[in-house]
Structures are given as C-alpha cells and as structure tokens.
Image 1: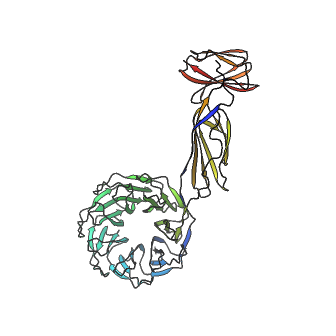
Image 2: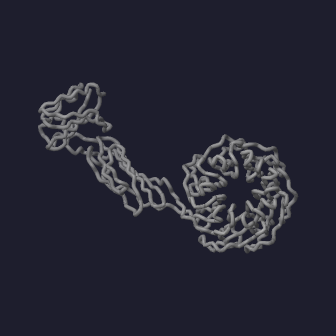
Image 3: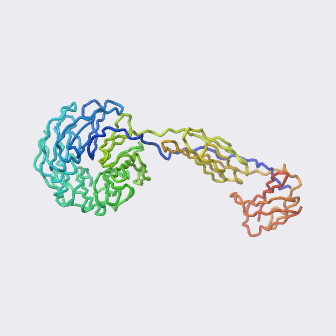
Length: 541
C-alpha cells in the first residue's frame, strides 16, 4: 500500500459561493450653493411654500435680519432669494407650518435682538404678508417650533429665549391669532433650542429644551391640555448644549432624544424606556468641533434613523449611519466647506425619493444643499478558480473601474501585494475552507466588498509525479518518521490547518524526523527538490 499523493492535489469542491456587501451605500455630491449673500446665515429649513409640489428652501440670516426663501423649479433647480422679512432683528431660527388652517405653509421666526416670535402668512403662492408678532417679549429669542400643544387640533407655537431662560408656548385660536405667553420653564439657563414630541407615549406633545449655560437637556411633561410638569433633566453633562431633537433611534417605537453640544464637541443620544425615563448619554461623536445643530432622518433608505450634525469650528456637515439598534458608525463628512456651519436639515430637494442635506453657514454667508446619491456597484464577483489545489498559486481578478482602488484579504492562504489593483495572486494552503475578499473603494469613497468562499478536500492517489522513488515510513507513525530518496531537499511538515510546524533541509538519501511532540492527526509532508514538489500524506497516531 502506498502513501504517496500527486503534486497537484485533487481538489473536491464542497462549497463555493460569492457574497457581496456594500460598506457604504450612499454618498453626497459637493456643495451646491443656494445663496452666498445670506449674511451670517444661521438657520435652514425646507417646505413646499408655493404649492408646486417641490420642496423650497428657507433661511434665516442674523447679520442682515432676513427671513427668505428660494423657489425650487424642479430637480433641485433653485431660484433666487425671495425676502419674506428684512426686519427680524438678529433672527436665529425659522420654521414652516400651516398656522391658520388654510392648507398652506406659513413661516415662523425667532429673532434675538428684538425679542420677537413672529409669523408670516402665505397666500398659497409663496407671497407672504407682513410680520405678525406673536410675542415681543421672548428676551433673546433663540428658537421657534410649532405643534398642537393643547390637543384642540390647532398648531400652537413654542419658543426658547436665552436672556430670560424661558421655554414658553402660545395658544392658537385656529386662525393664527395667538394668546399670551404661557411659561413652561424659566429655569433653562441660556435656553438655546426647543422641540415638541410625545415622549411618554400618552398621545400628547411633550416639550424638550437644550440650554447652553447649565449644559442641560430637559423635558416637560404635558397633561394633554398644555399644562406642563416641572423640568425633567435628561442630561446636565452636555457642555454648552445648543440643539435638541427626538426620533426613534433604536427601533423600539418610542422617541429617543438627541443633543448637540459645542463645549465638548459631542453629538449624543439618550434612550427612552417608552415612559419618558432616559438612559445615560450615548456618544455618537465627540469630534464635531463646535457642534451647533443635530437632526435625524433616514438617509440611506434602510428603514432606520441616521443622524446629521453641523459643527462650527471645523466647518463640517456630517452624518452617522445607524445600524437600526442605535449603534452608529463613524463620522462621514458630507462637506468641510461650510465655513462656520451652524444649521443642518434634510429634505428631498430634487424629488428623486431620497433625503438630501441642507446647511446654513455663518462665516461664509452661505445656504447650500448636498445631493444624496446612491453608490454604484461595479464589482459583483471574483473571477478565478474556486477549487484550487493545495499550494497552488491562482490569479484572481474583478472588474476594473477607473479611479477605484482594491484591497484584497485572503483566509486559508497568502496573498501577494496587489498595490491597490483589481488583480491578485493567491497561494492556497493545504485542505480546508478558504476565503478571498476584495473591497473596492471608488472616487466617491463608496465601498463594496465581494467574497469568494471555498472548501477543498485533498484526495490521496497512488503515485508521485515529481519523484517516483520518494517514500515515507512508517505511516501511520508514532512520531519518528523516515524519508528515503530525499537528497538535497527542503522538507516541510504542515498540519491540517495549513500551518508549517517543522521545516528542515535534507542532504542525505535517508532523513529522519521527530514529530513525537505533535498531536495525533493528519499531516502533510511537502518535499521540494530540483525535480519539483511532492506532497505526502502522513498520519500520526
């Protein structure tokens, strides 16, 4: 009975298939400027203001006291600035919603220098009436929002004002006439942001605030009629909290809370237990230098809420991909050209079914948008043998795309350097499962990974092609192994995992090897001579 096997092992393919994953599914086009003369632009929003079915863009610029909008003629073709107001002193915040029940989006503003919360009535075509003052006494008005606070079916208005530390609301009579200020809290030290959402699952709109001097993110429970409980602190560790928002981030059906804090450069979230009890801070990023704004929306159309940020000191608009459970990927920079990035928002500007991104940047006076694009997949499979022999070197390729780079990783073998090219040589080890993966990174930093998985079984035969006299005995062996006719040979002993456990050089016709310290099992002895390479199967017992 012979123990010799062929030089090229006969490989039986038990499993071979290709898998493909996309590490990044979307990217954003470079900055498209909507306006470059919105002096000290610090708020951006979007809504259909003229009834043409396209989403228009709104801006607030406190350097010129203007509230303005930009008509969208379709596919993101935005027109020139249409001024709604030029006397909103130091305007800090804008919002759009139907306030008088006529079906058209009106516009709200909060202006810091004149302490006003105001609204502007839309005639349905994007022509706005004169300023209607809701309150002239929101001292240092920083933020405005709207929601049905008292459950009567009409949209009420909320404000945050920093000089009097107030969070307040104003009741709408359904026609856009608003009652007096109703204070929710006067304890939000340097109130910077306000938002409303049902946080405790009782069907009414609770209120959130961020305040920068006391580093607080807090909420106020609504009894359903617009009467609010005392402040409930979510966090007092958001250093210079400037922005607050809420969305279901972990997919459990309740509203979690987001914050942006400029003092510690953090974008963070707080998990809701469904009753309004919030967990500790979960940091999404601590690299948003001067974080001023946070927003959540599904950017990659995978059904969960991703997060957007604007950070002032590093000029960045960025997003963070959600895995669906509230675990976020690293910062993905959309733009670092928003000089003094102050505000971020998302809407489908080009009407293609995905959410584009908008920014307002303070230092370059810009309002801009960034088109959301789906990554193109150029590689779909790896070309090359899916059933190589042990120790065989095989060339593999994928489709080459101009500008792309390729990173190859092999398991069960060793890859030669591909230098970022679309081809690689793979040297497989002895029998077992192997895997070869390649990641393509294109010019837009989109990444796609393709993997080829195989399982190879070595089958022994009766003779050696390279050296018919070569013999190994005893086999099976207790550990002491003799090889005959192996003069001037390199001898490697390899375990079933493909690892070389012993290597010697033979200079005589008869060579003895001591493998008595190795565990029992199947091994392969690879003999390299001037005549070629022979691999012998060895059993230790």
